[in-house]
Length: 566
Image (cartoon, rainbow, N blue to C red):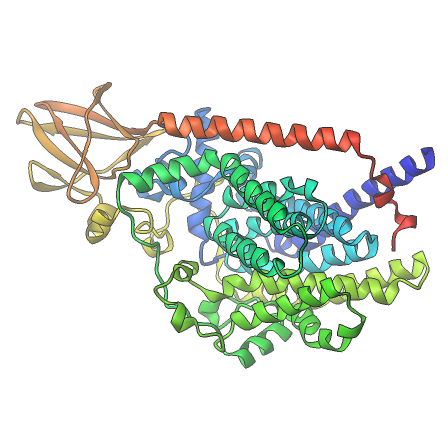
Protein backbone atom coordinates (compact mmCIF):
# COMPACT_ATOMS: atom_id res chain seq x y z
CA UNK A 1 0.00 0.00 0.00
CA UNK A 2 2.83 2.39 0.85
CA UNK A 3 4.49 1.63 -2.47
CA UNK A 4 1.28 2.37 -4.35
CA UNK A 5 0.85 5.63 -2.45
CA UNK A 6 4.43 6.62 -3.24
CA UNK A 7 3.97 5.87 -6.94
CA UNK A 8 0.66 7.71 -6.94
CA UNK A 9 2.39 10.76 -5.43
CA UNK A 10 5.30 10.46 -7.87
CA UNK A 11 2.99 10.71 -10.85
CA UNK A 12 1.33 13.82 -9.51
CA UNK A 13 4.75 15.39 -9.04
CA UNK A 14 5.67 14.30 -12.58
CA UNK A 15 2.48 15.80 -14.04
CA UNK A 16 2.94 19.06 -12.12
CA UNK A 17 6.54 19.53 -13.23
CA UNK A 18 5.67 18.43 -16.76
CA UNK A 19 2.87 21.03 -16.94
CA UNK A 20 5.13 23.80 -15.63
CA UNK A 21 7.81 23.00 -18.22
CA UNK A 22 5.43 22.62 -21.17
CA UNK A 23 3.69 25.89 -20.30
CA UNK A 24 7.06 27.65 -20.14
CA UNK A 25 8.11 26.25 -23.52
CA UNK A 26 4.83 27.49 -24.99
CA UNK A 27 5.06 31.03 -23.67
CA UNK A 28 8.86 31.57 -23.91
CA UNK A 29 9.12 32.69 -27.57
CA UNK A 30 6.37 35.27 -27.09
CA UNK A 31 7.57 36.54 -23.74
CA UNK A 32 11.07 36.90 -25.19
CA UNK A 33 9.82 39.28 -27.90
CA UNK A 34 8.45 41.68 -25.31
CA UNK A 35 5.35 42.77 -27.22
CA UNK A 36 1.88 41.56 -28.09
CA UNK A 37 0.61 40.75 -31.56
CA UNK A 38 -2.00 43.27 -32.65
CA UNK A 39 -4.63 40.54 -32.97
CA UNK A 40 -8.19 40.89 -34.25
CA UNK A 41 -9.67 41.20 -30.74
CA UNK A 42 -6.69 42.58 -28.84
CA UNK A 43 -8.01 46.01 -27.91
CA UNK A 44 -11.40 44.53 -27.13
CA UNK A 45 -10.18 41.99 -24.59
CA UNK A 46 -7.46 44.22 -23.13
CA UNK A 47 -10.16 46.80 -22.46
CA UNK A 48 -12.22 44.17 -20.64
CA UNK A 49 -9.16 43.20 -18.58
CA UNK A 50 -8.52 46.87 -17.79
CA UNK A 51 -12.11 47.36 -16.60
CA UNK A 52 -11.99 44.33 -14.29
CA UNK A 53 -8.61 45.50 -12.95
CA UNK A 54 -10.35 48.75 -12.10
CA UNK A 55 -13.00 46.87 -10.11
CA UNK A 56 -10.26 45.17 -8.13
CA UNK A 57 -8.34 48.39 -7.62
CA UNK A 58 -11.45 50.19 -6.37
CA UNK A 59 -12.37 47.31 -4.10
CA UNK A 60 -15.87 47.41 -5.59
CA UNK A 61 -16.91 44.32 -7.50
CA UNK A 62 -20.05 45.72 -9.12
CA UNK A 63 -20.50 42.91 -11.64
CA UNK A 64 -21.48 42.57 -14.38
CA UNK A 65 -21.30 46.37 -14.45
CA UNK A 66 -20.84 48.92 -17.21
CA UNK A 67 -17.54 50.10 -18.61
CA UNK A 68 -16.41 53.32 -16.96
CA UNK A 69 -12.66 53.12 -17.61
CA UNK A 70 -12.86 51.69 -21.12
CA UNK A 71 -14.97 51.54 -24.28
CA UNK A 72 -14.89 55.35 -24.47
CA UNK A 73 -16.88 55.78 -21.21
CA UNK A 74 -20.16 55.14 -23.01
CA UNK A 75 -21.58 53.06 -20.17
CA UNK A 76 -21.07 50.05 -22.44
CA UNK A 77 -22.35 46.83 -20.87
CA UNK A 78 -19.97 44.39 -22.53
CA UNK A 79 -19.65 42.24 -19.40
CA UNK A 80 -23.42 41.75 -19.24
CA UNK A 81 -23.18 39.82 -22.50
CA UNK A 82 -19.57 38.63 -22.58
CA UNK A 83 -18.59 36.44 -19.61
CA UNK A 84 -15.77 37.93 -17.55
CA UNK A 85 -15.01 35.48 -14.73
CA UNK A 86 -12.09 33.67 -16.39
CA UNK A 87 -10.41 37.00 -17.22
CA UNK A 88 -9.79 37.56 -13.50
CA UNK A 89 -6.27 36.02 -13.54
CA UNK A 90 -5.21 38.51 -16.24
CA UNK A 91 -6.72 41.43 -14.31
CA UNK A 92 -5.07 40.38 -11.04
CA UNK A 93 -1.72 40.00 -12.79
CA UNK A 94 -2.23 43.39 -14.44
CA UNK A 95 -2.26 44.94 -10.96
CA UNK A 96 0.54 42.82 -9.51
CA UNK A 97 3.11 43.15 -12.32
CA UNK A 98 4.57 46.47 -13.38
CA UNK A 99 4.95 45.46 -17.03
CA UNK A 100 1.47 44.93 -18.53
CA UNK A 101 2.85 42.91 -21.46
CA UNK A 102 4.47 40.48 -19.04
CA UNK A 103 1.22 40.34 -17.07
CA UNK A 104 -0.68 39.22 -20.16
CA UNK A 105 1.90 36.55 -21.01
CA UNK A 106 1.98 35.26 -17.45
CA UNK A 107 -1.80 34.93 -17.80
CA UNK A 108 -1.23 32.86 -20.92
CA UNK A 109 1.27 30.79 -18.96
CA UNK A 110 -1.30 30.15 -16.22
CA UNK A 111 -3.97 28.93 -18.62
CA UNK A 112 -1.49 26.83 -20.56
CA UNK A 113 -0.40 25.19 -17.30
CA UNK A 114 -4.06 24.46 -16.47
CA UNK A 115 -4.60 23.17 -20.02
CA UNK A 116 -1.78 20.65 -19.66
CA UNK A 117 -3.10 19.45 -16.29
CA UNK A 118 -6.65 19.02 -17.61
CA UNK A 119 -5.51 17.41 -20.86
CA UNK A 120 -3.31 14.93 -19.02
CA UNK A 121 -5.89 14.08 -16.37
CA UNK A 122 -8.73 13.62 -18.85
CA UNK A 123 -6.68 11.49 -21.20
CA UNK A 124 -5.40 9.39 -18.30
CA UNK A 125 -8.94 8.70 -17.17
CA UNK A 126 -9.98 7.89 -20.74
CA UNK A 127 -7.02 5.75 -21.82
CA UNK A 128 -5.44 4.53 -18.56
CA UNK A 129 -2.09 5.28 -20.23
CA UNK A 130 0.49 7.78 -19.10
CA UNK A 131 2.07 7.63 -22.56
CA UNK A 132 -1.07 8.67 -24.42
CA UNK A 133 -1.82 11.22 -21.69
CA UNK A 134 1.58 12.84 -22.08
CA UNK A 135 1.34 12.71 -25.87
CA UNK A 136 -2.14 14.24 -25.90
CA UNK A 137 -1.01 17.05 -23.59
CA UNK A 138 1.86 17.88 -25.93
CA UNK A 139 -0.16 17.65 -29.13
CA UNK A 140 -3.05 19.71 -27.78
CA UNK A 141 -0.96 22.39 -26.06
CA UNK A 142 1.09 23.08 -29.20
CA UNK A 143 -1.78 22.70 -31.63
CA UNK A 144 -1.71 25.49 -34.18
CA UNK A 145 -5.37 26.42 -33.83
CA UNK A 146 -4.96 26.96 -30.09
CA UNK A 147 -2.00 29.26 -30.77
CA UNK A 148 -3.94 31.12 -33.48
CA UNK A 149 -6.82 31.72 -31.07
CA UNK A 150 -4.60 32.98 -28.26
CA UNK A 151 -1.63 34.75 -29.82
CA UNK A 152 -2.46 35.50 -33.46
CA UNK A 153 -6.10 36.58 -33.08
CA UNK A 154 -5.94 37.43 -29.37
CA UNK A 155 -9.39 35.85 -29.18
CA UNK A 156 -8.68 35.50 -25.49
CA UNK A 157 -12.03 34.08 -24.40
CA UNK A 158 -11.98 31.40 -27.11
CA UNK A 159 -8.41 30.52 -26.14
CA UNK A 160 -9.38 30.10 -22.48
CA UNK A 161 -12.46 28.05 -23.43
CA UNK A 162 -10.19 25.54 -25.18
CA UNK A 163 -8.78 24.75 -21.73
CA UNK A 164 -12.07 23.19 -20.63
CA UNK A 165 -13.17 21.27 -23.74
CA UNK A 166 -11.33 18.05 -22.72
CA UNK A 167 -13.44 17.99 -19.52
CA UNK A 168 -16.60 18.21 -21.60
CA UNK A 169 -15.50 15.45 -23.97
CA UNK A 170 -14.48 13.09 -21.18
CA UNK A 171 -17.60 13.78 -19.14
CA UNK A 172 -19.99 13.22 -22.06
CA UNK A 173 -18.19 9.99 -22.98
CA UNK A 174 -18.39 8.68 -19.42
CA UNK A 175 -22.08 9.57 -19.04
CA UNK A 176 -23.07 7.87 -22.31
CA UNK A 177 -20.57 5.00 -22.51
CA UNK A 178 -18.61 4.74 -19.28
CA UNK A 179 -19.12 5.33 -15.59
CA UNK A 180 -22.21 7.44 -15.02
CA UNK A 181 -20.91 8.82 -11.74
CA UNK A 182 -18.60 11.14 -13.70
CA UNK A 183 -21.53 13.31 -14.82
CA UNK A 184 -20.15 16.34 -12.88
CA UNK A 185 -17.38 16.58 -15.49
CA UNK A 186 -19.99 17.58 -18.07
CA UNK A 187 -21.41 20.19 -15.71
CA UNK A 188 -18.01 21.58 -14.74
CA UNK A 189 -16.62 21.63 -18.27
CA UNK A 190 -19.71 23.17 -19.81
CA UNK A 191 -20.19 25.73 -17.02
CA UNK A 192 -16.60 26.92 -17.26
CA UNK A 193 -17.01 27.33 -21.01
CA UNK A 194 -20.22 29.33 -20.42
CA UNK A 195 -18.36 31.53 -17.95
CA UNK A 196 -15.73 32.13 -20.63
CA UNK A 197 -17.21 32.41 -24.13
CA UNK A 198 -20.84 32.16 -25.19
CA UNK A 199 -20.15 31.08 -28.79
CA UNK A 200 -17.84 28.31 -27.58
CA UNK A 201 -20.62 27.22 -25.22
CA UNK A 202 -22.98 27.20 -28.20
CA UNK A 203 -20.58 24.95 -30.13
CA UNK A 204 -20.20 22.73 -27.06
CA UNK A 205 -23.99 22.44 -26.83
CA UNK A 206 -24.22 21.40 -30.49
CA UNK A 207 -21.48 18.83 -29.90
CA UNK A 208 -23.36 17.36 -26.92
CA UNK A 209 -26.60 17.10 -28.87
CA UNK A 210 -24.93 15.46 -31.90
CA UNK A 211 -22.84 13.13 -29.73
CA UNK A 212 -25.94 12.10 -27.78
CA UNK A 213 -27.90 11.49 -30.98
CA UNK A 214 -25.17 9.29 -32.47
CA UNK A 215 -24.69 7.43 -29.18
CA UNK A 216 -28.30 6.22 -29.21
CA UNK A 217 -27.32 3.67 -31.85
CA UNK A 218 -24.63 2.14 -29.63
CA UNK A 219 -25.39 2.56 -25.93
CA UNK A 220 -27.32 0.50 -23.46
CA UNK A 221 -29.54 2.08 -20.83
CA UNK A 222 -30.50 4.72 -23.38
CA UNK A 223 -33.17 6.38 -21.26
CA UNK A 224 -31.16 6.39 -18.04
CA UNK A 225 -27.99 7.72 -19.65
CA UNK A 226 -29.89 10.27 -21.74
CA UNK A 227 -31.67 11.61 -18.66
CA UNK A 228 -28.36 11.79 -16.80
CA UNK A 229 -26.83 13.84 -19.61
CA UNK A 230 -29.87 16.11 -19.52
CA UNK A 231 -29.56 16.38 -15.75
CA UNK A 232 -25.89 17.40 -16.01
CA UNK A 233 -26.96 20.08 -18.50
CA UNK A 234 -29.62 21.41 -16.15
CA UNK A 235 -27.13 21.54 -13.30
CA UNK A 236 -24.82 23.46 -15.66
CA UNK A 237 -27.49 26.15 -15.94
CA UNK A 238 -27.55 26.52 -12.15
CA UNK A 239 -23.75 26.51 -11.99
CA UNK A 240 -23.64 29.24 -14.68
CA UNK A 241 -26.49 31.28 -13.20
CA UNK A 242 -24.07 33.97 -12.01
CA UNK A 243 -23.69 34.98 -15.65
CA UNK A 244 -26.83 33.61 -17.32
CA UNK A 245 -29.43 35.36 -15.15
CA UNK A 246 -28.06 38.84 -15.92
CA UNK A 247 -27.67 38.00 -19.60
CA UNK A 248 -31.25 36.72 -19.91
CA UNK A 249 -32.63 39.62 -17.88
CA UNK A 250 -31.11 42.14 -20.28
CA UNK A 251 -32.27 40.23 -23.36
CA UNK A 252 -35.82 40.34 -22.00
CA UNK A 253 -35.59 44.07 -21.23
CA UNK A 254 -34.81 45.27 -24.76
CA UNK A 255 -34.01 44.01 -28.24
CA UNK A 256 -30.48 43.32 -29.42
CA UNK A 257 -29.34 42.34 -32.90
CA UNK A 258 -27.03 39.44 -33.68
CA UNK A 259 -23.49 40.70 -32.99
CA UNK A 260 -21.45 41.26 -36.18
CA UNK A 261 -23.29 38.94 -38.59
CA UNK A 262 -20.97 37.46 -41.21
CA UNK A 263 -21.38 35.52 -44.43
CA UNK A 264 -20.59 31.88 -43.68
CA UNK A 265 -17.88 30.54 -45.96
CA UNK A 266 -15.27 27.83 -45.47
CA UNK A 267 -11.80 27.95 -46.97
CA UNK A 268 -10.89 26.05 -50.14
CA UNK A 269 -9.72 22.62 -49.01
CA UNK A 270 -6.42 22.66 -50.91
CA UNK A 271 -5.54 26.03 -49.44
CA UNK A 272 -6.46 24.83 -45.96
CA UNK A 273 -4.37 21.65 -46.25
CA UNK A 274 -1.33 23.60 -47.52
CA UNK A 275 -1.66 26.17 -44.74
CA UNK A 276 -2.01 23.37 -42.19
CA UNK A 277 1.16 21.65 -43.39
CA UNK A 278 3.04 24.95 -43.15
CA UNK A 279 1.53 25.61 -39.68
CA UNK A 280 0.62 29.11 -40.83
CA UNK A 281 0.16 31.40 -37.83
CA UNK A 282 -0.22 34.68 -39.70
CA UNK A 283 -3.30 36.84 -39.31
CA UNK A 284 -5.94 36.60 -42.02
CA UNK A 285 -5.58 40.37 -42.60
CA UNK A 286 -1.98 39.67 -43.67
CA UNK A 287 -2.82 36.76 -45.94
CA UNK A 288 -2.81 34.00 -43.36
CA UNK A 289 -5.27 31.12 -43.41
CA UNK A 290 -6.42 29.88 -40.03
CA UNK A 291 -5.76 26.14 -39.90
CA UNK A 292 -5.23 23.07 -37.70
CA UNK A 293 -1.44 22.78 -38.15
CA UNK A 294 0.81 20.15 -39.63
CA UNK A 295 0.64 17.65 -36.74
CA UNK A 296 -3.16 17.50 -36.83
CA UNK A 297 -3.45 17.39 -40.63
CA UNK A 298 -0.74 14.70 -40.76
CA UNK A 299 -2.63 12.59 -38.22
CA UNK A 300 -5.89 12.96 -40.16
CA UNK A 301 -4.25 12.06 -43.47
CA UNK A 302 -2.15 9.14 -42.23
CA UNK A 303 -4.68 7.83 -39.75
CA UNK A 304 -6.52 5.95 -42.48
CA UNK A 305 -3.55 3.59 -42.76
CA UNK A 306 -3.87 2.65 -39.08
CA UNK A 307 -7.61 2.08 -38.98
CA UNK A 308 -7.23 -1.68 -38.63
CA UNK A 309 -5.14 -1.23 -35.48
CA UNK A 310 -7.63 1.21 -33.93
CA UNK A 311 -10.32 0.17 -31.49
CA UNK A 312 -13.93 0.96 -32.37
CA UNK A 313 -13.84 3.99 -30.10
CA UNK A 314 -10.80 5.48 -31.78
CA UNK A 315 -12.19 4.74 -35.23
CA UNK A 316 -15.16 6.91 -34.31
CA UNK A 317 -12.89 9.61 -32.87
CA UNK A 318 -10.75 9.60 -36.01
CA UNK A 319 -13.83 9.73 -38.25
CA UNK A 320 -15.19 12.68 -36.28
CA UNK A 321 -11.88 14.45 -36.81
CA UNK A 322 -12.07 14.00 -40.57
CA UNK A 323 -15.75 15.00 -40.74
CA UNK A 324 -15.35 18.14 -38.64
CA UNK A 325 -12.27 19.18 -40.64
CA UNK A 326 -14.32 18.78 -43.82
CA UNK A 327 -16.98 21.04 -42.26
CA UNK A 328 -14.47 23.91 -42.03
CA UNK A 329 -13.86 23.85 -45.79
CA UNK A 330 -15.76 25.30 -48.74
CA UNK A 331 -16.91 21.78 -49.65
CA UNK A 332 -19.43 21.98 -46.83
CA UNK A 333 -22.62 23.79 -47.97
CA UNK A 334 -22.28 26.77 -45.63
CA UNK A 335 -24.50 28.89 -47.88
CA UNK A 336 -27.43 26.72 -46.81
CA UNK A 337 -26.65 27.48 -43.17
CA UNK A 338 -26.87 31.24 -43.68
CA UNK A 339 -29.84 32.62 -41.80
CA UNK A 340 -30.13 29.53 -39.58
CA UNK A 341 -29.14 29.27 -35.91
CA UNK A 342 -25.65 28.19 -37.05
CA UNK A 343 -25.00 31.63 -38.55
CA UNK A 344 -24.19 32.98 -35.07
CA UNK A 345 -20.78 31.25 -35.20
CA UNK A 346 -19.74 33.90 -37.79
CA UNK A 347 -16.69 31.96 -39.01
CA UNK A 348 -16.60 28.24 -39.90
CA UNK A 349 -12.96 28.12 -38.77
CA UNK A 350 -14.30 28.23 -35.21
CA UNK A 351 -15.18 24.56 -35.68
CA UNK A 352 -11.45 23.77 -35.89
CA UNK A 353 -11.48 23.09 -32.17
CA UNK A 354 -13.11 19.74 -32.97
CA UNK A 355 -10.73 18.36 -35.63
CA UNK A 356 -7.92 19.61 -33.40
CA UNK A 357 -9.21 17.73 -30.37
CA UNK A 358 -10.08 14.54 -32.29
CA UNK A 359 -6.77 14.54 -34.19
CA UNK A 360 -4.80 14.99 -30.94
CA UNK A 361 -6.73 12.12 -29.33
CA UNK A 362 -6.07 9.91 -32.36
CA UNK A 363 -2.39 10.85 -32.47
CA UNK A 364 -1.93 10.16 -28.76
CA UNK A 365 -3.47 6.72 -29.21
CA UNK A 366 -1.23 5.93 -32.19
CA UNK A 367 1.85 6.91 -30.17
CA UNK A 368 0.71 4.67 -27.32
CA UNK A 369 0.14 1.73 -29.71
CA UNK A 370 3.57 2.15 -31.28
CA UNK A 371 5.37 2.35 -27.93
CA UNK A 372 3.43 -0.14 -25.79
CA UNK A 373 5.75 -3.10 -26.42
CA UNK A 374 8.85 -1.15 -25.40
CA UNK A 375 10.43 -0.42 -22.03
CA UNK A 376 9.78 2.64 -19.93
CA UNK A 377 12.99 4.34 -21.12
CA UNK A 378 12.14 3.85 -24.79
CA UNK A 379 8.61 5.14 -24.19
CA UNK A 380 10.12 8.21 -22.58
CA UNK A 381 12.42 8.68 -25.57
CA UNK A 382 9.47 8.41 -27.96
CA UNK A 383 7.66 11.11 -26.01
CA UNK A 384 10.71 13.39 -26.11
CA UNK A 385 10.83 12.91 -29.88
CA UNK A 386 7.10 13.73 -30.02
CA UNK A 387 7.76 16.95 -28.12
CA UNK A 388 10.59 17.93 -30.48
CA UNK A 389 8.56 17.08 -33.58
CA UNK A 390 5.68 19.23 -32.31
CA UNK A 391 7.69 22.15 -30.95
CA UNK A 392 10.32 22.64 -33.68
CA UNK A 393 8.00 23.64 -36.58
CA UNK A 394 5.63 25.37 -34.14
CA UNK A 395 8.53 27.51 -32.89
CA UNK A 396 9.60 28.42 -36.43
CA UNK A 397 6.05 29.47 -37.28
CA UNK A 398 5.65 31.40 -34.03
CA UNK A 399 8.87 33.38 -34.57
CA UNK A 400 7.99 34.09 -38.20
CA UNK A 401 4.57 35.35 -37.21
CA UNK A 402 5.89 37.51 -34.34
CA UNK A 403 8.45 39.12 -36.65
CA UNK A 404 5.93 39.96 -39.38
CA UNK A 405 2.73 40.73 -37.50
CA UNK A 406 1.66 44.17 -36.35
CA UNK A 407 2.85 44.88 -32.82
CA UNK A 408 1.08 46.40 -29.86
CA UNK A 409 2.77 48.32 -27.11
CA UNK A 410 1.06 49.78 -24.06
CA UNK A 411 1.00 53.60 -24.07
CA UNK A 412 1.07 53.66 -20.27
CA UNK A 413 3.25 52.03 -17.65
CA UNK A 414 0.41 49.87 -16.37
CA UNK A 415 -2.70 47.99 -17.46
CA UNK A 416 -4.76 51.20 -17.58
CA UNK A 417 -3.86 52.11 -21.17
CA UNK A 418 -5.79 54.59 -23.29
CA UNK A 419 -8.71 53.58 -25.49
CA UNK A 420 -8.00 52.80 -29.13
CA UNK A 421 -8.53 55.54 -31.73
CA UNK A 422 -9.82 52.81 -34.03
CA UNK A 423 -13.48 52.45 -33.05
CA UNK A 424 -13.97 49.38 -35.26
CA UNK A 425 -11.43 47.46 -33.15
CA UNK A 426 -13.66 47.89 -30.11
CA UNK A 427 -16.89 46.51 -31.63
CA UNK A 428 -18.99 48.91 -29.57
CA UNK A 429 -22.06 48.32 -31.73
CA UNK A 430 -22.27 44.63 -30.78
CA UNK A 431 -23.97 45.04 -27.42
CA UNK A 432 -25.82 48.26 -27.97
CA UNK A 433 -29.60 47.79 -28.25
CA UNK A 434 -31.31 47.73 -31.63
CA UNK A 435 -32.60 51.26 -31.10
CA UNK A 436 -28.99 52.54 -30.82
CA UNK A 437 -27.63 51.07 -34.03
CA UNK A 438 -28.40 54.12 -36.22
CA UNK A 439 -26.76 56.43 -33.71
CA UNK A 440 -23.54 54.59 -32.89
CA UNK A 441 -21.32 57.30 -34.42
CA UNK A 442 -23.03 60.08 -32.48
CA UNK A 443 -22.84 58.12 -29.22
CA UNK A 444 -19.17 57.35 -29.86
CA UNK A 445 -18.48 61.05 -30.43
CA UNK A 446 -20.26 61.85 -27.14
CA UNK A 447 -23.07 63.74 -28.85
CA UNK A 448 -26.11 64.16 -26.62
CA UNK A 449 -29.10 66.44 -26.46
CA UNK A 450 -30.18 69.14 -24.02
CA UNK A 451 -33.77 70.17 -24.66
CA UNK A 452 -33.51 68.69 -28.18
CA UNK A 453 -30.37 70.69 -28.99
CA UNK A 454 -27.26 68.68 -29.94
CA UNK A 455 -24.45 69.09 -27.42
CA UNK A 456 -21.12 67.34 -26.95
CA UNK A 457 -20.98 65.97 -23.41
CA UNK A 458 -17.52 64.85 -22.32
CA UNK A 459 -17.66 62.09 -19.67
CA UNK A 460 -15.44 61.79 -16.63
CA UNK A 461 -14.58 58.41 -15.17
CA UNK A 462 -14.91 58.18 -11.38
CA UNK A 463 -14.23 54.62 -10.28
CA UNK A 464 -17.43 52.68 -10.91
CA UNK A 465 -19.34 55.59 -12.41
CA UNK A 466 -19.30 57.91 -15.42
CA UNK A 467 -20.15 61.48 -14.58
CA UNK A 468 -21.16 64.67 -16.37
CA UNK A 469 -21.47 68.24 -15.18
CA UNK A 470 -24.32 69.99 -17.00
CA UNK A 471 -25.59 73.53 -16.53
CA UNK A 472 -29.04 74.56 -17.72
CA UNK A 473 -31.03 77.76 -17.44
CA UNK A 474 -34.38 75.96 -17.67
CA UNK A 475 -36.18 73.93 -15.04
CA UNK A 476 -37.15 70.33 -15.91
CA UNK A 477 -34.72 70.23 -18.83
CA UNK A 478 -34.66 67.00 -20.78
CA UNK A 479 -31.18 65.51 -21.17
CA UNK A 480 -30.29 62.69 -23.56
CA UNK A 481 -26.76 61.59 -22.64
CA UNK A 482 -24.32 59.66 -24.87
CA UNK A 483 -24.48 56.68 -22.51
CA UNK A 484 -26.10 53.36 -23.40
CA UNK A 485 -29.14 52.45 -21.30
CA UNK A 486 -29.40 48.98 -19.81
CA UNK A 487 -31.99 47.62 -17.42
CA UNK A 488 -29.89 48.18 -14.31
CA UNK A 489 -28.32 51.48 -15.35
CA UNK A 490 -28.76 53.82 -12.39
CA UNK A 491 -28.63 57.64 -12.33
CA UNK A 492 -27.71 60.01 -9.48
CA UNK A 493 -28.17 63.77 -9.85
CA UNK A 494 -26.30 65.78 -7.22
CA UNK A 495 -26.10 62.62 -5.13
CA UNK A 496 -29.80 61.78 -5.34
CA UNK A 497 -31.09 58.76 -7.23
CA UNK A 498 -33.51 59.78 -9.98
CA UNK A 499 -35.76 58.09 -12.51
CA UNK A 500 -34.13 57.17 -15.80
CA UNK A 501 -35.77 56.37 -19.12
CA UNK A 502 -34.54 55.30 -22.54
CA UNK A 503 -34.35 57.80 -25.37
CA UNK A 504 -35.19 56.93 -28.96
CA UNK A 505 -31.43 56.35 -29.34
CA UNK A 506 -31.42 53.67 -26.65
CA UNK A 507 -29.42 56.02 -24.43
CA UNK A 508 -29.94 57.40 -20.93
CA UNK A 509 -32.59 60.12 -20.71
CA UNK A 510 -33.64 62.13 -17.64
CA UNK A 511 -34.98 65.46 -16.41
CA UNK A 512 -32.73 67.89 -14.53
CA UNK A 513 -33.38 71.10 -12.60
CA UNK A 514 -32.17 74.60 -13.35
CA UNK A 515 -28.53 75.24 -12.45
CA UNK A 516 -25.42 73.05 -12.36
CA UNK A 517 -26.13 69.34 -12.13
CA UNK A 518 -23.61 66.63 -11.46
CA UNK A 519 -24.92 63.46 -13.07
CA UNK A 520 -23.38 60.11 -12.11
CA UNK A 521 -24.21 56.96 -14.05
CA UNK A 522 -23.65 53.62 -12.37
CA UNK A 523 -24.81 50.02 -12.56
CA UNK A 524 -26.65 48.30 -9.73
CA UNK A 525 -27.02 44.55 -9.92
CA UNK A 526 -30.66 43.51 -9.68
CA UNK A 527 -32.12 40.96 -7.27
CA UNK A 528 -32.24 38.49 -10.17
CA UNK A 529 -28.50 38.85 -10.77
CA UNK A 530 -27.71 38.49 -7.06
CA UNK A 531 -29.94 35.43 -6.90
CA UNK A 532 -28.09 33.95 -9.88
CA UNK A 533 -24.76 34.46 -8.15
CA UNK A 534 -26.06 32.81 -4.98
CA UNK A 535 -27.46 29.83 -6.91
CA UNK A 536 -24.18 29.47 -8.78
CA UNK A 537 -22.10 29.50 -5.58
CA UNK A 538 -24.36 26.93 -3.90
CA UNK A 539 -24.26 24.68 -6.98
CA UNK A 540 -20.47 24.80 -7.17
CA UNK A 541 -20.16 24.03 -3.45
CA UNK A 542 -22.43 21.00 -3.86
CA UNK A 543 -20.39 19.82 -6.86
CA UNK A 544 -17.13 20.20 -4.93
CA UNK A 545 -18.52 18.34 -1.89
CA UNK A 546 -19.80 15.57 -4.17
CA UNK A 547 -16.41 15.16 -5.84
CA UNK A 548 -14.50 15.26 -2.53
CA UNK A 549 -16.79 12.68 -0.91
CA UNK A 550 -16.54 10.44 -3.94
CA UNK A 551 -12.74 10.73 -3.98
CA UNK A 552 -12.60 9.73 -0.32
CA UNK A 553 -14.86 6.73 -0.87
CA UNK A 554 -13.23 5.41 -4.01
CA UNK A 555 -9.56 4.65 -4.16
CA UNK A 556 -8.47 4.70 -7.77
CA UNK A 557 -4.80 5.16 -7.16
CA UNK A 558 -3.97 2.11 -9.25
CA UNK A 559 -5.08 4.09 -12.27
CA UNK A 560 -2.34 6.65 -11.64
CA UNK A 561 0.71 4.47 -11.36
CA UNK A 562 3.31 4.92 -14.08
CA UNK A 563 4.72 1.43 -13.91
CA UNK A 564 1.26 -0.17 -14.02
CA UNK A 565 0.09 1.70 -17.13
CA UNK A 566 1.22 1.73 -20.71
